[in-house]
Length: 399
Image (cartoon, one colour):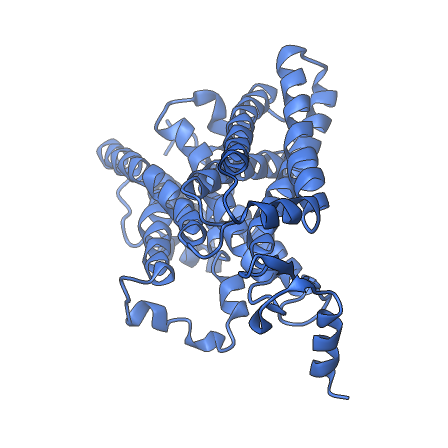
C-alpha cells in the first residue's frame, strides 16, 4: 500500500470528534515553532545589551558585546527554518523583489533586513571599528587582510573619530530598541491577527511574544556568558550575573502575569470557542502547557531566582542555580511557542473535533532538522567569538 495512504490512515485513527478533511495533517510543524523562538532570542538579547548602552546599567558591561554577537548569530539563522519549510525554498528571495504591502509575512521580510543590516551589523561595526583597525595593524597574513576588509577602509582612530563612533553607535542602539520590539512583536501580530483561530486571535498576542522574547533572550545571554567563561576557565563577574538574574526575574514575572491575564480573559468571556479550547488545554496541551511551559519554564525559575534575590547563597551554588534556571527558561519558552503554533492547529474550525501531531525524527520537518537549526547559531556564535573576541579588545585609552 502507498506509504502516504498508510500515514493518512494512521492520522485518521487518532482523530477525535468531527474535523474538516483538510485539517487531518498540520500545515505548520516544528520548523515554524523555531521561527518565533529564534527571533525572540534575538530581540531579547539585543534588549539586554541596550540596558548597558542606552540606560547606562554599567554592571552589565561584561555581557554587552556577548549579547550583541549572540543576537547577530541567531538573527542570521532566524529565517532559515522558514525557508526549510517551503516546498520550493530556492524561491525565498521573491518575497523581497515582489513586495506585497498587505501581506504580514512580506512586511516581516523588510523588518528582518532592517534589523539585520541597519541595526545589528552597524552597531557591532561602530563598536568594534577601533579594534578592527588595531587588529589589522597587529596581525599578519590572511587575518591582517580580513580585519582590514572589515574596517571598510575607515582607519581613523583619533579621539574625535572615536567619539563620533560612540555617538552613531548610541543612536543606532536607541533606534534598535523599538526595532527589536517590532521584530518579535510582529511575529506575535502574525498569529494574533488570524481571526478564524480563537487560540491565536487575541490583542495580547504581540505583547506576550515581546515579553517572552525578553525572557528567552536574557536567559540565553546568561547561559552563553556562563559557558564562555567556563570554557575559557575565567572567573565569572558575580555582580553582573546577579544583575542579569534580577532582570530575568522581573521579565519572567511580567510574562507570567500577561499570559495569566490572557487565560483569565478567555475564561471570563467564555465565548462559543471556550469549550473546545478548554478541552485543548486539559487534553492535547496538558503536559506541554502546565508542566513544561508554566511549571518548569516559569514557576520553578521564578521561585529559584526569587529565593536567590532574597537570600544570597555562596557564589558556586548561585552559578549552578542560575545555569539551571536559564536552561529551564529556554525550554519553557520553546514550549510556549510550541503551544501557540502546534496547539492552534490541533482543534478543528468546526469546534467539534481534534486532530493530532506526530513529530518525526528524520525528514525535512523532523526533529533532527530542527536540531540542526538550533545548533547552527551556536556554531556561528563560536566563529564570531573567534573573529571578534570580546575578551581581547584593546583598552579604551590605548592605541
